[in-house]
Image (cartoon, rainbow, N blue to C red; front, side, top):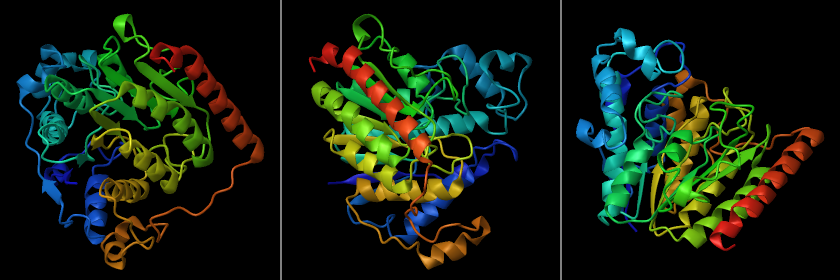
Length: 375
């Protein structure tokens, strides 16, 4: 098995602003932890630096007038019409290099898609990607260009059958929208329930349209859903549908804002449960393109994505974080000295409510969607 991890030092140039929750430092921190564990020097793994994607390639999904506004905003000053395209103070700020950053994110995921499609690697990981909220004609949810959609379009153009599995705490609405009527792309999103969290979508009844009915699948989850509740629900829904679909490639969005200490969300997974879900995804197709996604506690991001890259390479890591890394990252004041999380107690009634809610959603998926696939 050959693998590739895609990373660029250029991400250090970009900054959403000092008050914005999406910190670019999470990428460099993840890269240093991977390196401290020796995961950037594996004999069968390639380290690849992406190039910025061409505008014409990005325009395969995104509207030209929207891209014109992104380009015009690259100086850090937005044109007056930027607000029409979701740009401005708040979630999607205009910052110096915004167009360059969007092109770099797209380029990384497209590079991963090409490596997988060409058979150069079996698994690729672009942890700066997974910006799954961007719509064709507007920015949304910290996302400017939808690199996941562009990667899927590349794989489809190569004749490959694609399943998209999104385990971010937020619903993967931009990817669902892009393929809502397409029976050749199966999209599955597990996420915090849409009536409690942005973007307010991702209900089981969002099943696709036209020929694509049944190929958009959502598993919403209640607040404080922990790994003990999440993993059985995932197992009940995701593997049966993906096995029936028989994809050539899985594109996996591995957001870690589902972690119990993430400041923006309300799920309660630990790193161990996250990695078990990643490991299960790896069994569902012969080739995998993994992307990053949400994650707003930098410590969680570095530990989880390092563990995910290890899983992509079938490597077991020691639990103790490398001392050299902890010294290098002392500015972070890591709460944990371990890759893994200690046990956490959730009130029994909250755990029961999360379990009951997940069971109802699984039953609804089985009732509404499974029969459409002959299950």
